[in-house]
Image 1 (cartoon, rainbow, N blue to C red):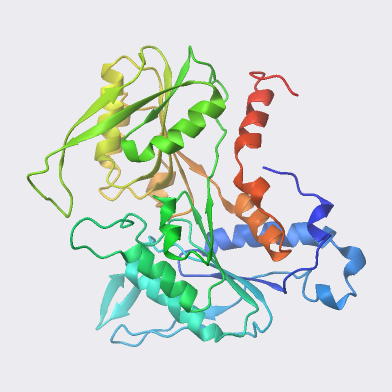
Image 2: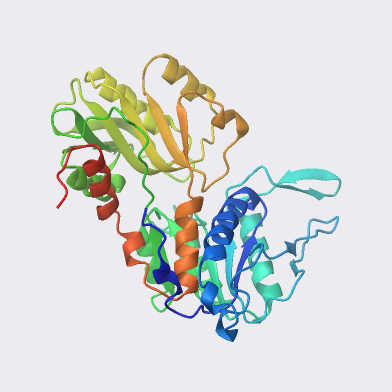
Length: 387
């Protein structure tokens, strides 16, 4: 992470900073808000009386909104305070199924479509009064439906275009399933942020002790990057599919086949953007264990774990993997957070850097580039000499 410096106050803010937490994002928003309040309490003190810094230092940057619903399930968005001239950042987790609403006397969990509809309601309630609107959507809505095969909808592209047409200026996401979806809004601002974790103290980062493995061809570009930066070898699996059948909209996987150097005795880092059910990931882990791999670290940005935790509990008990790392960019159940095999990666401080930098309309290139961060980690571990 880059250190907080005075350079953030060398430019005038775009406008008073405001953060809107959509349902299910309150905890993440609170953490981001605390960082910003702490930093700005010490920043720009000499500019406090300058009208350009109006609203710069506040007790909170959270903006109060509500989303009341009628008994039929219909809803409306309400902004409960003035946001005229604000630089607004709306944080939404469209995969938070712990959020519910009442419809015809039934308690209904919110789907990604419900969250997305609420996001549009809040944008509509702002009514063009804000100076700028940025959407922070850690996991991109419909991001897996990023390309068309036969007669299919292109939901992610349509959503991005709709948000831009509603007046959204910037869209920020973490580790998009395919960052080429930004081609749907060529004149819009789209930031794809790659998170990074460093919490394994006894990891030997060299070609003799560590390998990076791609679980499929889709994750290969991520793994090439990390393997190159770490200076270790790369391996990959490819999925053999049955193209004669379609199950749940996809051709079912017949087998995962490995390509690469020997993994015997080496620690393994498997890198991907997400875990959905976990079946494919656990099969890859099992295959690697069959090839006599050492500890297996599963590092993905998002852990949906749609089919529950029991299958991971059993695999961990059998020694199939060592740890699973995912971020708090999507909802994490209390049960998941209590598991010995799970490590949560907090995005709040990293995200706060982005919000603070963007509010000053400064470049975020240094924040997007992970190369320096990886190099600092290697230097700290004594695996690389400082230049």
